[in-house]
Image (cartoon, rainbow, N blue to C red; front, side, top):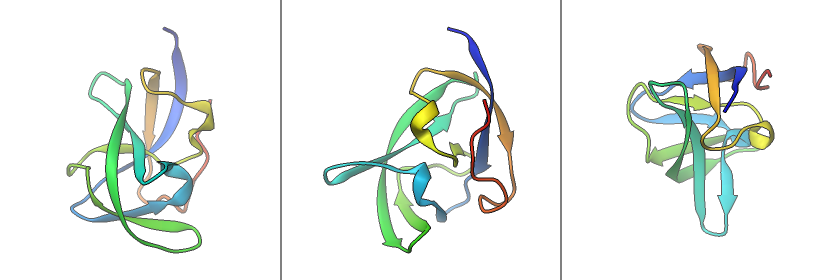
Length: 98
Protein backbone atom coordinates (compact mmCIF):
# COMPACT_ATOMS: atom_id res chain seq x y z
CA UNK A 1 0.00 0.00 0.00
CA UNK A 2 1.52 3.38 -0.96
CA UNK A 3 2.32 5.94 1.71
CA UNK A 4 0.30 9.14 1.72
CA UNK A 5 2.66 12.12 2.07
CA UNK A 6 1.40 13.56 5.34
CA UNK A 7 -1.35 13.65 7.90
CA UNK A 8 -1.70 16.48 10.37
CA UNK A 9 -1.57 14.90 13.83
CA UNK A 10 -1.60 16.01 17.41
CA UNK A 11 0.01 14.30 20.37
CA UNK A 12 -2.39 13.42 23.16
CA UNK A 13 -2.03 14.29 26.83
CA UNK A 14 -4.01 12.76 29.70
CA UNK A 15 -7.37 14.35 28.87
CA UNK A 16 -7.79 16.07 25.56
CA UNK A 17 -10.19 17.96 23.44
CA UNK A 18 -9.89 17.90 19.69
CA UNK A 19 -11.62 19.21 16.58
CA UNK A 20 -14.99 17.55 16.02
CA UNK A 21 -13.97 16.63 12.46
CA UNK A 22 -11.31 14.26 13.91
CA UNK A 23 -14.07 12.08 15.40
CA UNK A 24 -16.23 9.69 13.44
CA UNK A 25 -19.55 8.73 14.97
CA UNK A 26 -21.52 5.58 14.23
CA UNK A 27 -24.71 5.49 16.27
CA UNK A 28 -23.72 5.65 19.93
CA UNK A 29 -20.02 4.87 19.32
CA UNK A 30 -17.18 7.20 18.30
CA UNK A 31 -13.68 6.63 16.95
CA UNK A 32 -10.54 8.49 15.87
CA UNK A 33 -7.60 7.56 13.64
CA UNK A 34 -4.31 7.05 15.50
CA UNK A 35 -0.88 6.77 13.82
CA UNK A 36 1.01 3.72 15.12
CA UNK A 37 4.85 3.64 15.43
CA UNK A 38 5.11 2.15 11.90
CA UNK A 39 3.22 5.11 10.39
CA UNK A 40 0.04 3.14 9.79
CA UNK A 41 -3.42 4.41 10.74
CA UNK A 42 -5.49 2.47 13.24
CA UNK A 43 -9.08 3.18 14.21
CA UNK A 44 -9.50 3.61 17.96
CA UNK A 45 -12.82 3.63 19.84
CA UNK A 46 -13.14 6.61 22.20
CA UNK A 47 -15.60 7.81 24.82
CA UNK A 48 -16.65 11.43 24.37
CA UNK A 49 -17.49 14.07 26.98
CA UNK A 50 -18.52 17.68 26.54
CA UNK A 51 -18.93 18.82 22.95
CA UNK A 52 -18.86 22.39 21.67
CA UNK A 53 -19.52 23.71 18.20
CA UNK A 54 -16.00 22.90 16.96
CA UNK A 55 -14.27 20.86 19.71
CA UNK A 56 -15.07 17.67 21.62
CA UNK A 57 -13.63 16.26 24.84
CA UNK A 58 -12.22 12.71 24.73
CA UNK A 59 -12.63 10.99 28.11
CA UNK A 60 -11.11 7.60 27.33
CA UNK A 61 -9.70 5.40 24.59
CA UNK A 62 -6.45 7.28 23.98
CA UNK A 63 -3.07 6.86 25.63
CA UNK A 64 -0.65 9.64 26.40
CA UNK A 65 1.52 10.41 23.35
CA UNK A 66 -0.92 8.82 20.86
CA UNK A 67 -0.83 10.72 17.57
CA UNK A 68 -4.38 11.44 16.39
CA UNK A 69 -5.30 12.63 12.89
CA UNK A 70 -7.03 15.94 13.56
CA UNK A 71 -8.00 16.93 10.03
CA UNK A 72 -10.86 15.68 7.97
CA UNK A 73 -11.03 11.88 8.04
CA UNK A 74 -12.58 11.65 4.57
CA UNK A 75 -9.20 11.16 2.87
CA UNK A 76 -7.87 8.57 5.33
CA UNK A 77 -8.78 4.99 6.22
CA UNK A 78 -7.55 2.54 8.84
CA UNK A 79 -4.57 0.71 7.36
CA UNK A 80 -3.29 3.70 5.33
CA UNK A 81 0.40 4.49 5.76
CA UNK A 82 1.11 8.18 6.39
CA UNK A 83 3.93 10.54 7.25
CA UNK A 84 2.62 12.24 10.41
CA UNK A 85 3.14 15.98 10.73
CA UNK A 86 2.66 16.77 14.41
CA UNK A 87 1.28 20.19 15.37
CA UNK A 88 1.19 21.64 18.87
CA UNK A 89 -2.40 22.85 18.66
CA UNK A 90 -5.12 21.40 16.48
CA UNK A 91 -6.59 24.82 15.81
CA UNK A 92 -3.47 25.94 13.91
CA UNK A 93 -3.88 23.39 11.12
CA UNK A 94 -6.94 21.27 10.90
CA UNK A 95 -6.75 19.90 7.35
CA UNK A 96 -4.88 16.70 6.55
CA UNK A 97 -2.48 17.21 3.66
CA UNK A 98 -2.05 14.60 0.96
